[in-house]
Image 1 (cartoon, rainbow, N blue to C red):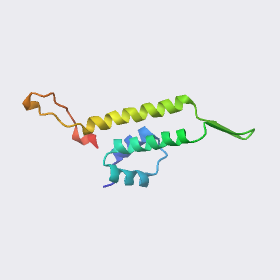
Image 2 (image 1 turned 60 degrees about the vertical axis):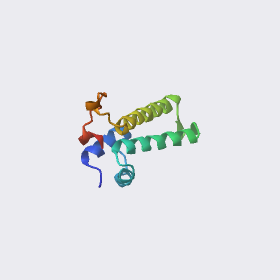
Image 3 (image 1 turned 135 degrees about the vertical axis):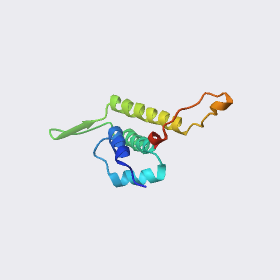
Image 4 (image 1 turned 45 degrees about the horizontal axis):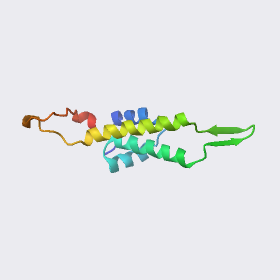
Length: 110
């Protein structure tokens, strides 16, 4: 099942508007939720930043650097997405048995 317009809008808000929709659809089929797709994409971006050089320069032509703020922002985003994934996949508690329940809108989980 392909991503809905709502899920695609959510993904764009998390990972930007220049995304390959076909790639996102494949990830969605494999992972099952838009949150999991966003988490995977952001983790890949963080891994790419960490594995590459922290700066690159062609004097007078081009320069690029990855500062600690960018890395911290991506780490914070992956942590937030992981917390959301953990909450979505946490076992539900039986409220009738005296447990504290978890309210989930199933139309928003995916």
